[in-house]
Image 1 (tube, rainbow, N blue to C red):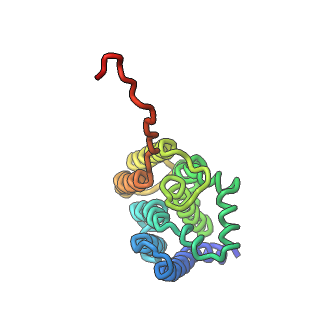
Image 2: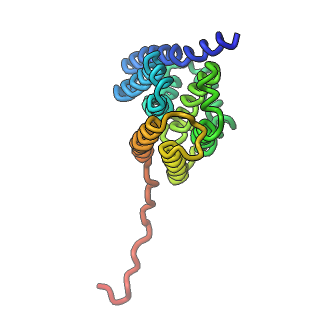
Image 3: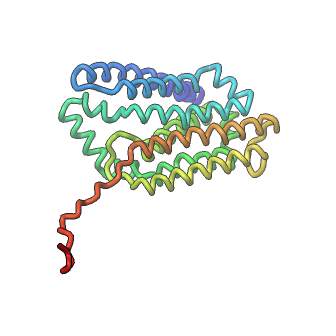
Length: 263
């Protein structure tokens, strides 16, 4: 039963990515004919689903199992780059447009409810994404995931889900009630950058981490996570700044006071 559940969890992200990509492409085509839909969003979402399928493909999964550098590459694709592309596709906005009016209103109420507000805040997302990495590498969880298929599959599910939530909370173009200020999101992103960089350095040095892999693979993985993570986090920061709009300044409606000697 445990092996069957592990297989189902292992295939679930692949199946969901395929179904999500197909449904998105179909909905985007219909919406483009009706009210218009940016082609860049469709391209971004489909690229994200493709990366999820690639990251969890048998070849990449086998590479990650035999080489810790492969694990780092899989981690970057699944937890950082694919979520960024998926979120920039604005799937919730497309879904709200395509759903029947009543269903769209229910989804809108859910997004504006307590759960939606909590998920839109960067602190819970930061705890799940960066905190999850700390638990993965500084506790026996990584070793456990290499010996048990169910734990291995659950780690993949968590990496993808936490990456999606963090990216959406930081720079998602979809509507979100009570979204934190740009300054707060930049701070959260800065903390995530610091945590990721620190873990990368610890893996490179083989210090404090609970990962028993060859030193050469550890150094390669640490370097890949450090430089690759920095690049993706820079793209996330640019996506955040692209959504920023300065508050309009109020025009000065008072007539300038003339001095008594003015002509």
